[in-house]
Figure 1 (cartoon, helix red, strand yellow):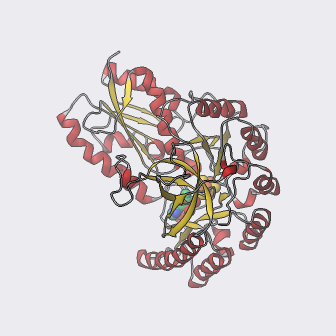
Figure 2: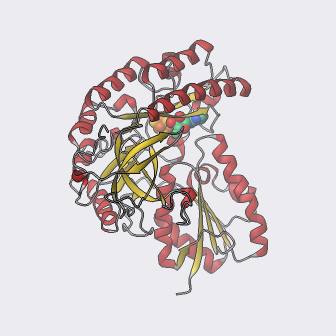
Figure 3: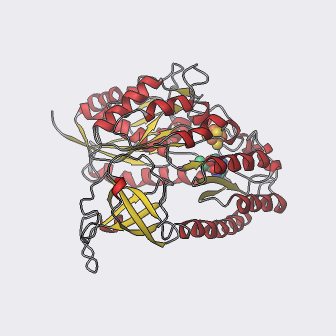
Length: 473
Ligand code: 5AD
Ligand code: SF4
């Protein structure tokens, strides 16, 4: 078979990262090999996101740039998938004349056939149909990407929550859970290929399996826990309204579940939460945070926040700042509200000016920065088990730092904080670091978005993650 090159550009969330991996796996039998060079590509796939206006603009600007490439290389096939494709459908072909294929969020299984038709007939195709049948056939072999330590696994698709600002239910369809057997089989395959950490993905993992009468999410977690060779489990995202005691207990009982939860709150104002259709109050949210911290004192909590939702007053915004002061998140993703097609809030009165949104975002980010720094600083002096992922970006060529004569590695704490560290030559230190190895690192410096430390030898750190908690130095 002639080798052809596939270039994938992924915009947006982890869900899209997973889907892009699935795209690559499914196109490999057609002879497509992934490349990081756009110029070499015979097929370019843009996997899009439409959650916020900015992500959608990014997609169109990338497509615009492809026009020149297509002129130089008329045989090039250009395809767009993901949420923008789902939302725009055939309109995209009109808007982008050099586009060959538009495929939706539930058409991954059909993608190879669509690409083959274009190769043979040089036609333009749109397929954005939403299969009503649960897409359970989407287990792809857990092979593919070279030597990755950490991978995502989608356990459910779509969303039934209809938050008023959100486009997801319209572009990703109703919530559908994958069968646990298919999930377990996929993770086993990944682990056989060297993966040590997996992140289970869903828009609201707390409602996993409920509609289909499969097992509950905590039950799924305990099945995943039994997979030998898997060291760490993460999951995202949780909806506070469904975040129950069973899941909180899992942080206590599970040895592989990491000490981190992403629990989007979106606003600290009850009035805004109601208008957003979030179905919980700030009091309930704060209560869940207390329960979590009572159960697992080391847990890191991160969240999403929207500023400038229609009708947000200064008092509402102050409630958000107040909630942030009460929780002291480890990290926060904050967004200026933007109108999205089909989302009910697009029709709401009381739109906030761009300038005011931007001012509020600035205030919020500054406040968060102080908490993030404080949380990172608190780890200085402790010894943390770090799952080594590879060379840090600065050292990704594998080159060595002159001053330290050591490779700079990167990995994460159980609480999901990035730690860079040197592999040093001191006697007794961990001088045989490999991707996927658990390395005990003494944290020496804290920065805004990462930590820095040196490996230390800990006898008990031999194998596995039993007791993978932080050690006071
Ligand atoms: N405007 C701004 N932020 C949004 N998000 C979702 N929809 C919008 C919107 N219309 C944010 C929410 C969500 C995150 C993934 O994106 O905070 O949790
Ligand atoms: Fe969107 Fe709300 Fe569903 Fe999250 S829970 S995907 S914010 S509708």
